[in-house]
Image (tube, rainbow, N blue to C red; front, side):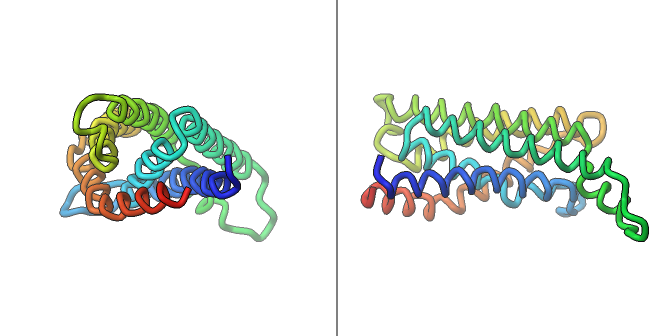
Length: 203
């Protein structure tokens, strides 16, 4: 693998792990969308699918799966560190313990739901992407068709897993969260296609 490809893979890995971590931190806040509660993670989480599509297209299934596992591991470590720091005794005079715990002491349901949704949906996204690429259908000739087609099903899995684990019995199922996530990815699809085309030519 050339040095240029290695650098690009490092960037994709870091961005994927960072996007998941930022999304998890943002998901703590429920914002008001016309009277409907939406977790803040939806703003950035679609980026994980875009990065996954680009990674599997440019580097193949095996390396893409490794990037997903690495992102999952980094976020798991972050969770343990947050809980460990919260458990440490606060220094006398530092009176932000409750605020710190409220922000970073995620509900275990939200943590498990988010990580389970990320792992299952991104692995499914990659599997579907490769199947479409190797098929005899129109998907094999169009990167963006594969990206959106695989994401459409993967988003359903992610929404179902996350909302069932994190919010079952607390909030009603919110189909619009799926629509919003796919809508953001659809809006970014021209940029995604342009990036893939440019990278494919330069690597």
